[in-house]
Length: 447
Ligand code: ADP
Image (cartoon, rainbow, N blue to C red; front, side, top):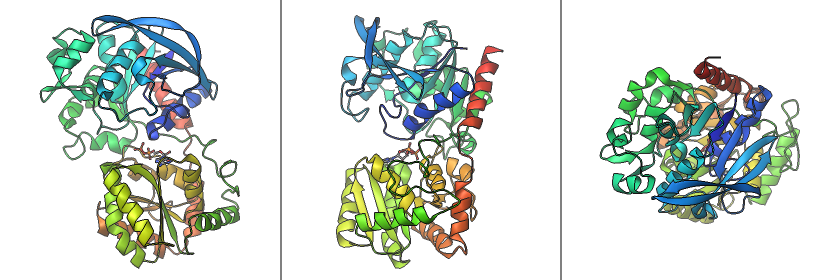
């Protein structure tokens, strides 16, 4: 069985969020199940790969060259799809993102002739199941929704000028949604199977509250939709061997955690109080604005806040301002910072995640693995992975009251060390999810 993944991020080559962690680790777990998946990602500027050849595809009616590279990570082969407009310093955030990823999907489709399963991820690869249905390649297709909020929406004039696909696909193949091209919808409609990254989210997205406008489409396709919980790369995220930590530790001896905590507090100039960590993109989804609103109340509860992240510039400024005014109690580091993220997961007492919605969430899994009980909102994968009072704390409402309730439950728990230890002992490995994906591929191939 030859399996190809097509995605826009893969750790360690390019990472914006959890998608990269999944694409960087699920293939290794599939390998342990006897598969040899090949991962197709754009050849972003700065990715070290070796050039192996070229292929051609058509865009805007012109023949265009694909420079093909190879790279390896964890024994898995990555194919780097080299296209001019990907040689930039970050994966997205450009006005032409839609055009770039349509180009990527068309180019990738040229390279998939050999495969039995094409597993496409998120809107950036969502065109592939439709291209398969047009006969561009023969594989069975799986489409995974990592985040329904980003759908790949654009006007049909540009889309058809770029792709030169038959116009009847607009209505006939599920591309049209409210008068625009919607790649996410096309992925859902055309794939042989649709998965998302937790069972709870698989249900939530079929409701008007969680459906981001696509709940009707998802209800109609519910027969082929299922949730498979994400795993974690438990070798990479391992407090006993983590090279970014000064003091390794495990569930049998948390004294190393206490030393990492002391280092973190002194590094950030914080006083010795219960310390809550936050590592997050600053997007509406993540509820960083709710944390900002809750800061006054949190300070009243006597906790420190350690925040790492970037995104919404207004919120970045808010947190920078608060850090300047709450020295010793609130620390904010802007940007993406892998080593500091590890030190926060290890050195915090609790981990705050007030998401408005959360497809799966990896940050809370990492926090649990590092013995840092997550305090999370009752939504999506957070609800599937955290047990209230046992491995973390769950609050109901996405507002200041909810956050403060959750933090109080954390502060008043009679034995936080026991919660930390139980959290560390949960199995978040990829083994079981990888078996579920393998079973799905087999089912699609009838083997
Ligand atoms: P999402 O994919 O929606 O951003 P997840 O919780 O699934 O959220 O995954 C987030 C991943 O990105 C985690 O591995 C987290 O540690 C990492 N991350 C987020 N922001 C930062 C940052 N500023 N610096 C380092 N790592 C970050």
